Image (cartoon, rainbow, N blue to C red):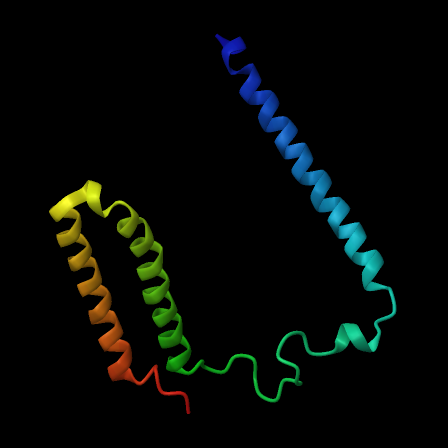
Length: 122
């Protein structure tokens, strides 16, 4: 009976040992490189190109989220529209109706974005 669970026990032991080894190794490597002298390139701003000028815990503007929703709306539309167009003859009228419903839902999302002003770039 116990021999049935032996592979699982071996797997858990190996996985736990590997996790401990990787954590200890990462800690030692991190401390080694933390002592290295930092140069100007490492301390420079990463992506935005300018230094931070406010608190990092400030609230995001709602337009950021609206643009993200807009991207998802158009991304989903394109991702589902191409396969639908290729297989339109095989899926028939039921596919046409279902895609119409899908596009209708996306149009509602687009109208919401439009009303909230996400398309206006101030």
